[in-house]
Length: 312
Image (cartoon, rainbow, N blue to C red; front, side, top):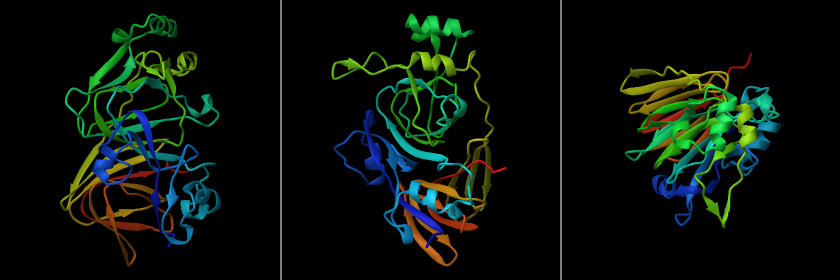
């Protein structure tokens, strides 16, 4: 029973949230403006709870802490990944994340796979300043239109955001987000919004200290493989995470060298491990533990599979 951990996870209201997550997956309170669904989380700000087997009702955080044999004896002090599905209906604050060394182990690299993007939506990717002094001055002068680099975004676009990259979203969309397990964000611009008559706190000094200057767009080289009617897109395999997306039409067998975080993005089907088959559907999150060496997916669905970085 410890070969797969099915999860029930928190849905978090946000200023920029909406109702697409609830509508798409048939879960959550439809009256709330949900911005973030923390599908697989061992972070204290939103813990996933296991719904099956001998660890039922325990948090993923506690099971990771007490049963490291299920996670290939991963040496990370805390569960290393946090996987969300977000909805954005209003501009998200412009922000930057620190790395582990700059934040006492709370560094935040992340990847986003964009879903259901409305036409005209844009992402913010970096800035045009050449020096830290110029960046500071232009922030103080509110030169946001010329300082921030904006790019159009479409369905199935994928981006990698390492620490130090200024980023944001202007538009309406859903996205799947895989990140280091951190909630550390330095906000540098919030569109002069007022909450209960007051602006939200900004973290300009901290942001200046960690921002990459001049901006360097990280290169990624996704590889698409079509086989037996299925499509695999290998997005990244780096020091933070390994991320693949599968478009399943027929049975697909996957290796599980350590442990895998699996999120069903759309559709429905089955998960088979050894001689046990489980129904799975859009919105579900699960961890395939290291007690499983291979597993199979069948049906018609899009599936995001994330793994921790290779252990040296």
